[in-house]
Length: 100
Image (cartoon, rainbow, N blue to C red; front, side, top):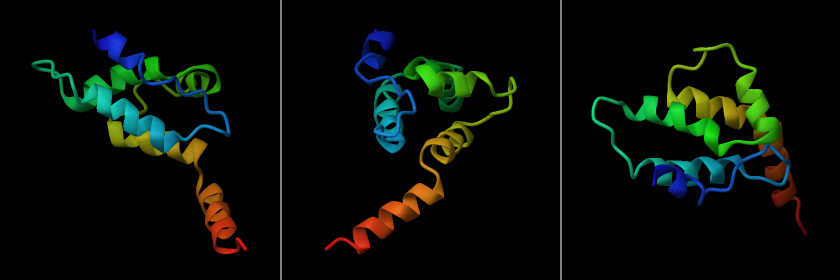
């Protein structure tokens, strides 16, 4: 049942047209429905998250040193830094403020 619910979240590939914020939000919505006794939310999310990725994003995650990410927040920050860097955020803000 868990993997069926996870399939409702489209896998994130890291394409420029995808929104990593939305992917994280949708992933957390699904993951929050499950509690496993003796397993922390962080550990559960870290184990499940790779199944929500594909292509370039999955390769990027797999290229990290084993155990180099210990918390969910660290993983989310790494994903956002890679696929929604501050430069992209600044460009979008500039595009919006200079729109005529």
